[in-house]
Amino acid sequence: MQVTINQDRCCGSGQCVLTAPTVFDQGEDDGLVQLLQEQPEPAVQSQVQLAAALCPGNAITVHDGADA
Image 1 (cartoon, rainbow, N blue to C red):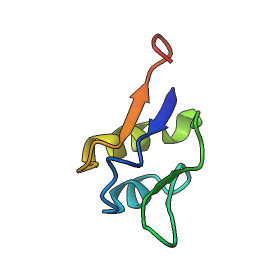
Image 2 (image 1 turned 30 degrees about the vertical axis):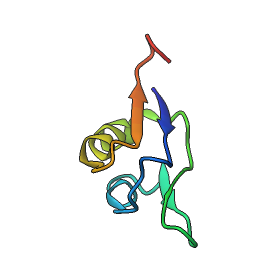
Image 3 (image 1 turned 90 degrees about the vertical axis):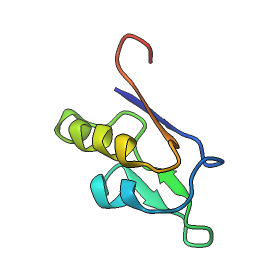
Image 4 (image 1 turned 120 degrees about the vertical axis):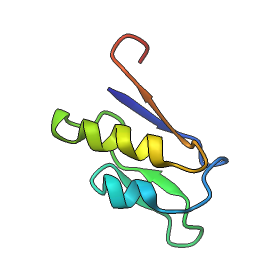
């Protein structure tokens, strides 16, 4: 799994941080998503997929092994 973010689409809701805090964080100044792990370990991959689905700005993209 490969994760990418688009900060231009981020609205700072923080759902990603609440859902997968080891993979995502928010900037102190702007509240925008920050990616902590581009290739999350298998134990948190379902949380990352949920975070991407919950993101109101569609700022998170999850690539599986075939298209990473």
